[in-house]
Amino acid sequence: MPYLIPSRTPLTPEQVERGFDYLLALQMGGGAAVAGRAEADPELAFVLLRLAEDIVGPATAMDGEAELSADSFALDEVGCALLSALRDWARDSPTTAAPGIARSIIRFTVNVIPDPDQPDTADILEAMRGERLVLAHAMHSAPGAHHCPHHRTGWERTGAVVRAPSPSSAHRDAHHRPLGALH
Image (tube, rainbow, N blue to C red; front, top):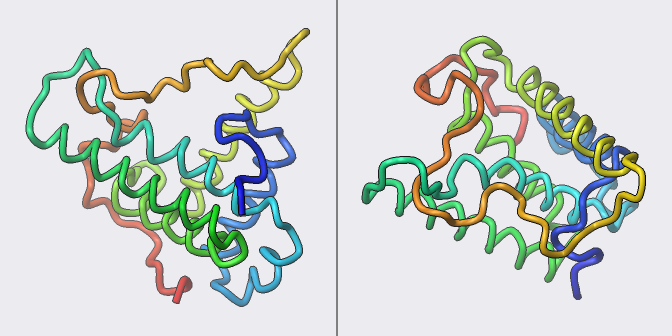
């Protein structure tokens, strides 16, 4: 099955809301809280995939301004491999991909970009929702706004690792909500 929408189409505010509603429901209530949503919303896998790209990409991609190391190349490749696998899953089975992509986003948020100022994963997801909503509103409300397929997303390969934009990136062992609700 082909992707539902071109992969770099900016998400609308409504799509951002739907995606984060799903993520938060899964985080707070587990699989039972999201049962049936993927079947009822065939676009959900695409929305979650775009959120994964926007969350994983900046934390793992290389940036030309940082010092290069073997770790930066490895982290970049791990991010690329994860996103490639999620894209294939979303393409091949959107209904089963939605909960898997959501779980991947939650695990990535917990393990790679914890925030000591917001130790609760749900709070971090809410903060991300707010950031993504601001961007979505800006993209879809600007006069003459339209998607440009050559628009740089800010996280393409350019040289060295880009760290998550929170001050917590150096504190990877911060306390956070356990993922027990996901199983």
